Length: 227
Ligand SMILES: *Cc1c(COP(=O)(O)O)cnc(C)c1O
Image 1: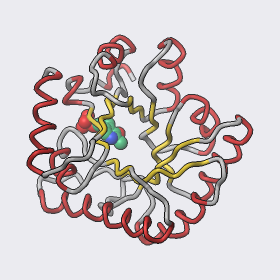
Image 2 (image 1 turned 90 degrees about the vertical axis):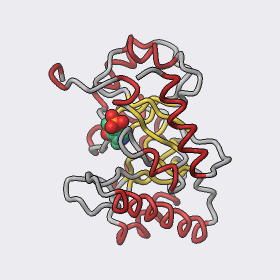
Image 3 (image 1 turned 90 degrees about the horizontal axis):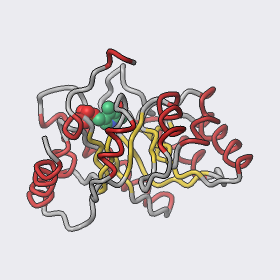
Image 4 (image 1 turned 180 degrees about the vertical axis):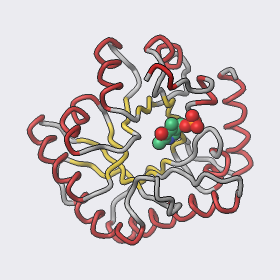
């Protein structure tokens, strides 16, 4: 699918949802080559790259050169990769434990940076999914908020794997509600609601997503054979 067709699909989802605010677009570039990423960077409405593995992102970033687009880590972050992630990524979207937040904060301090972060929430209850359980969100929120070298910008979730649209919407609506509650409780702006991928971004836009993460629709099916 070409960029214009994708843009039309996104715009029609935005119209259907009656949205007037800007919805940001992350080109999910995991498994894609640097050349493919350079092509995506030329699309004016691509706001971010999304990568899910620290090592892969590191090897690409080493050869990429200047990028007008910030890189976001959208995959689970293991504690032993936190330093590398803090060096490579502009934003880390997968904070899921207080320990990870504390470690990243310490590293950010050592690197002299403030790292923008999202908290990843498991809204579907699927065992295979990463992210904090909604029931455990409050203590995590407190832990992230109080780290002086992290700047909490909002939340991320991955929708459930199902054809049931209502179930998918419920998961996205749950993230929006969590985010509204967190805003009230903390007084923070928390502008980012990262939800929606190639298969479910239209539903995510209906439920208030401000950042959609698209891989397959933009680059074609992923080939994991080389990875
Ligand atoms: C791979 C991935 C995406 C993109 O998925 P597509 O279905 O290819 O659009 C989005 N978000 C996360 C967290 C991912 O790991």
